[in-house]
Length: 214
Picture 1 (spheres, rainbow, N blue to C red):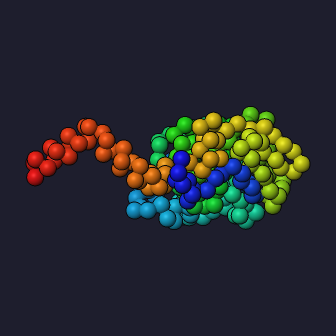
Picture 2: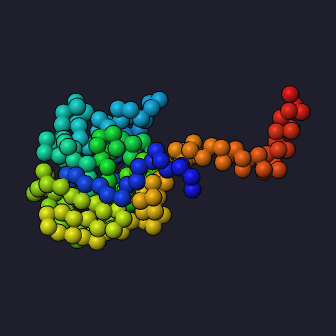
């Protein structure tokens, strides 16, 4: 490959403090309610992440980790099973990223949600139920201490502990090699794409048909 990845950072390692979000089957409508999706860009979505479970009808805060001062600088989210299920809205990981999340550790993720996270360079790494429960409790007890997520080695280290985690093979390769941003890759390889397109006979025919119509 040429210099296609020069502007795409490799994401082989993430560290920072954690925030526990407990519960199975947390869907994308909980992560970002549909009424906040009527935006031209994703800017500002972070403040609406988990809005309906964080605030009541009068916008008073509910009991939720994302409302707690001790978790405001967290960038590693620890979740349970089937996180990000439901609709395929890409606004969900966009909202989490703009709240400040750089990596998510969980028991399991909805496939499309994980794919949308990958497109943003956010690793979604998995571990078993016992490991996640222990990590969530540790984060609760140690909100200011750091978690190390080693994507390449598939390990998570925290408080003197090291846990084995799993990262989808394709995701790990894309993150570690810095080829997760497909839009940037296409832009970087624009000349090669145009050269390939020029050699495709059906595209030549399409151009001819358009010129004939003109």
